[in-house]
Length: 387
Image (cartoon, rainbow, N blue to C red; front, side, top):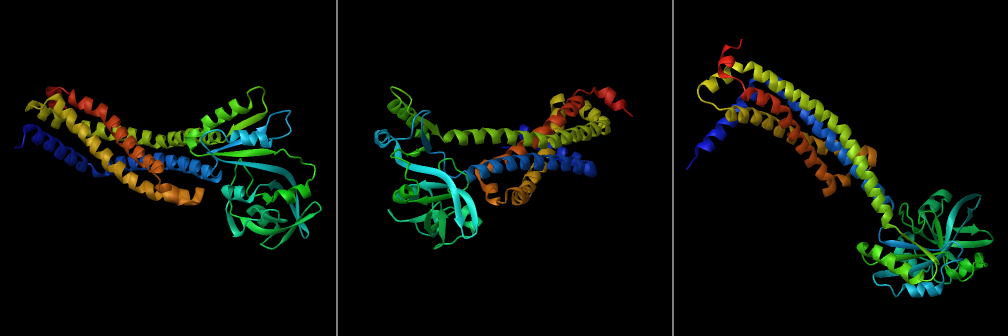
């Protein structure tokens, strides 16, 4: 059974549609303002979030790692300390390493890189080989980063010189991006025996160690347990948790996204003023109509509902159109700025489109509130006498 409320709701909707069609050109201009505003605010949010994802990806898989360095005054990380850390729960792997910086030469060219001694099985946990293979334990071979290979035009089989030593390149690592554990792209990795031959005075203590957690949410607990275990009497090691970097990146780019969205919201503010103007003009033009409606029994609520429905209908239709156009605009922006359009289809990015649509609808409603209130408070006699 159809209720009176249903009949009234349908009547209000039909009146709202009719009134918007009466001034088609003016309605279209107001809708364009909303569409542009939704595109602007959503696109800025998409850009900010995509930049965050791009930077996060460029740091590689770092959030689940802790870096162990000798404390000030200490010579290095000892094998005994490595064995003690293995007692801590939640650790997936501990990777000790020697490292230094040196000049890498090939024929008449040279560059500078980070020289590492990391066991083959440990290096396999940190990086992937794009061409060739990992070095064998005890060999004089090496694996190099992609940046060094590009700079010196190296390939598998080339022989590089570091100091007085010559090393054969057996593998080139896949580009990994910036990291805080190892410089994979600008590094030269070789066996402990070859590293000892190149730098005989290094001693038995490691320059640092990388601790990889089983789960990301265990990183802080592992950090606390290692510090309690090793720094019980005095500070002998310094622990740096790389998840702090990701948290800082996320916070920084949240602020950037909000700032960019704030710039985009100016367009919606302009659109809100445009809707306010359209609705006020509509109210003035329909003053006698409003007077007749009130004279035949329409209440303030009826008139208020009708005008708010007009603003809502305009806002919903225009915002949805703006949301659809945002997909195309976002794709174009990401292809030009970030060079990776895959970020557009992530849930975190798509949320900004829905937020833009909601802001558009809200702006339309806010813009229509005053004209609706003004129309609903008209006195019937004054409205009928209006010229």
